[in-house]
Length: 62
Image 1 (tube, rainbow, N blue to C red):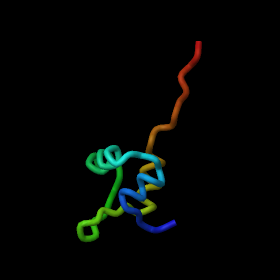
Image 2 (cartoon, rainbow, N blue to C red):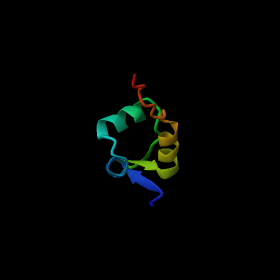
Image 3 (cartoon, one colour):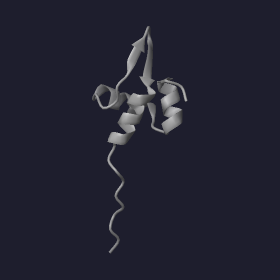
Image 4 (tube, helix red, strand yellow):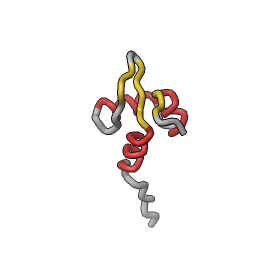
């Protein structure tokens, strides 16, 4: 895998929508870098973000 990904590449790789990615960026949950006008996300930062997400807990079925 590449060391850095564009927003579109992160979207395709994770299945997370562009709006939700920008929300995470604006909240400081996901780190990004700027290279000129291009926004890039380092793979390590993406891994950290994904690891920080809450685990899915199935609802109890009664």
